[in-house]
Image (tube, rainbow, N blue to C red; front, top):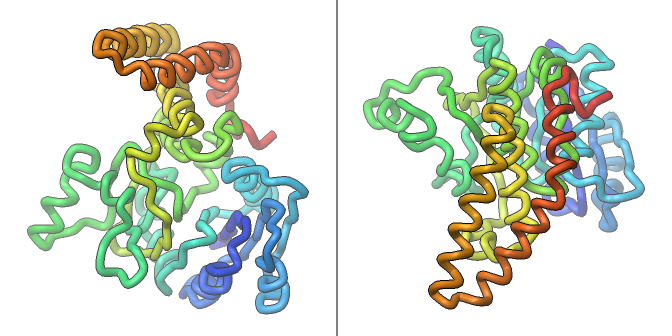
Length: 303
């Protein structure tokens, strides 16, 4: 199997040695590509000194997660890779992770994206965001099977975060890359919706594991972040599995109802914030419409 591991770096000196070493120590060692988003620390010096065989592509600017990964995904297609393994710079894989993911993928070709279990350092608890995606409502059967000691090789779910994804060549050819309309965050959820639109599946593989040293942000922080709130709106309006007319109507209706409630309860600061987010999103409706059209094409955002 030809596998290209893609690591997008940005000032990742504290993690990068452990991240790359974990791939070098895997039972199936992939080719490794670093796409650096104009780091200002010594990330690239560490890579060049300790891992001279690792290829590095340097960007003059911070492209963000999606655009930088697209460079690697395009390279995976050009070099006839069977799979791309996307791994965050602040994550590291268990020794059998890639081999286990591929073993399961080869038996379940309908799955375009497979994700290992995401643990926090120490492996005494799951990474919080990941744990939210594998509950009974979103990932049917997994928690019950885990409790009963009868875990299957693979479970289907609509979305799982992209700290570590194995993406099949067939998926890259059909779905393409990440949508650059998302500056940072949200591009992985949008990608999963596009995978489902293309009649492929997203799954987790309990027998494969990574550690993700993530800096957790609470919902209280996210709901007052204008960029994150706009991204939530983009995800809602980009969903190819629903008609754009329906999504636009539902978006305006739900936001107006929310604004009316805030006004009636005299929560004026929140009213002003939500109004600004709503109208800034509406101004971008033409761009979102164009993005939806491109997303339906094969190998979208990689051409």
